[in-house]
Image 1: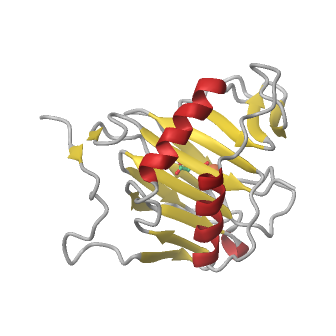
Image 2: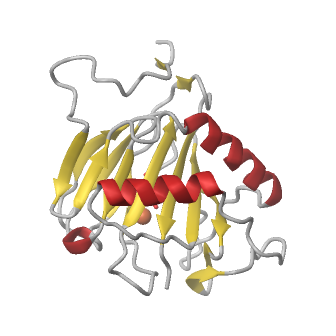
Length: 223
Ligand code: SIN
Ligand code: FE2
């Protein structure tokens, strides 16, 4: 069977089963469908510039496993993992240099999305950039390396669609499955800030802007 193809308007509601523009996952957590669609080309061009300076890499978990998702960062601090643990670091350990600055278009999108989701005044200092290829997955985890848990997480999906796994506050809570398409933005905070979440193995496909990749940006206030 040929791989599925996705065009730029993939996220437009096409039938009565389409989710509403703002889909609630849980108290404090929403998907803003299509929120970043118009900015997509500019965001992706910025990802190219950032990854030319700080290349995507497969980090090693504290347990010694190589992560299937490839990562880089921009902003004042970047999320890194190695045999000693997880941390935010002002320096890219591969180059010894500071991470590339957060582009204005990133910051503005994250602030507007947070505000639209009910979190005005969000001021991210870090953006983790994840790259998924078909088969790449991200197992259930909490985002809890940030010092100020009052700030939400803002997560932007681009390129191939994915299935977002959205669980509960306990690892054992069985996750629901939500489709994230190009331009969708998930915001979670408040009572949902420490919910376990992940990404199911990415299906094969071809997207007009990214080819066979999914790119995710997650904005955080780390301190
Ligand atoms: C993450 O949990 O950090 C990324 C989620 C995603 O790729 O949508
Ligand atoms: Fe996460």
